Image 1 (cartoon, helix red, strand yellow):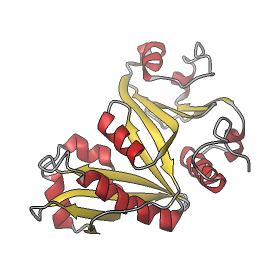
Image 2: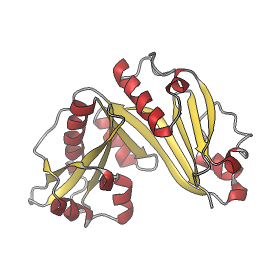
Image 3: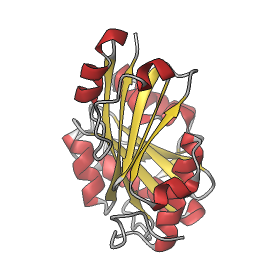
Image 4: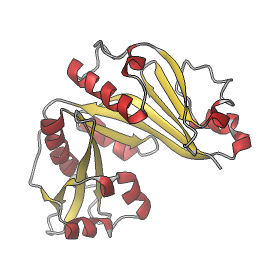
Length: 237
């Protein structure tokens, strides 16, 4: 299998690129060959109450119910379908913007620093107790069984990170840092431990960061993740 168009020189091995394609094809329920060529695809999913746009290089896939997809005709299909355009084109369906996230990946061995321990329910609850419900939900940690905790100098749980396997060859990362311990490197340390294990076990680690979250974007860059895709969504009223 060839690399995705536009990513022949990405800082990800050919096997890593293939793992990304396979995992996202399975996640979206679309044929893998769709990612072998540039272009756009509209996928009708009547059970969805949202429209989701996923882009890798020059390949764009948009999923949603037929009543929504029928309103997207003005979209050129040559660039990522941004929430602002979806909000405009889908106005009659009372859309609500969910947001946009970048998709970054790493398959090279991940160095770690400091110590991390298996995330016990008590330690994870301590970190969650010092963060908002929205931050906990965005982290995705509730759906992850493999989680590790890094403690602060005070001995208290400072940050928790984990991963969720996708398609066997890719693991999706999540992290949450206590508001009492932010800005001290604990989040990066926790993610490094989770990513190291994810890469060793599954091959590729995925980092999804809200485009509005500059700290998360910066952390991904510092940890050597390469941005390869984008995901946007709007909910329908």
